[in-house]
Length: 162
Picture 1 (cartoon, rainbow, N blue to C red):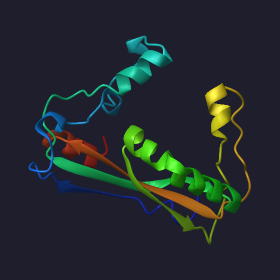
Picture 2: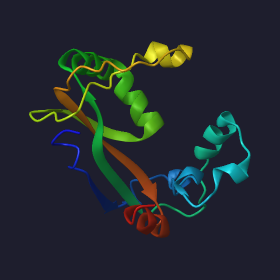
Picture 3: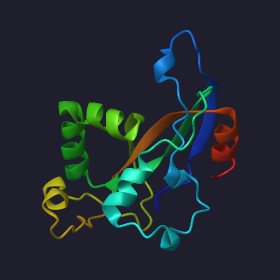
Picture 4: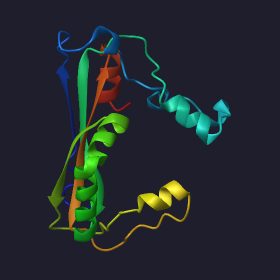
């Protein structure tokens, strides 16, 4: 954990309904955010569980943009540069589309504590092989801001912790 790990924050902004298409204005709350379901009772394999997690669980219109900012990972200088290069080469747009990551920034770590580089080669994940982390002392923290549109009730639940 580094000095930036405790710097998390959440906030909301009212959605300007004139700027959002009516057919695109839906609450993005998903089944995996429900939190009170016992996964053992669902009897789903991992593939089914991932599909279910992506299905919106609310039919209400979104009224708030809810932002969540946190340190996603710690990186050594070499892997921060590789990650930055990948993000600039188009991975950021993909992350925005798939994971609703609004933005990211790299922060210098001055007090790494026990933070080590968590870089994992994407090729290893895709191939389903060994997924070793780098493990060198962290010199940077990657902070991300996630955004999702939520209805009134789910905004309250999300900001209250789930």
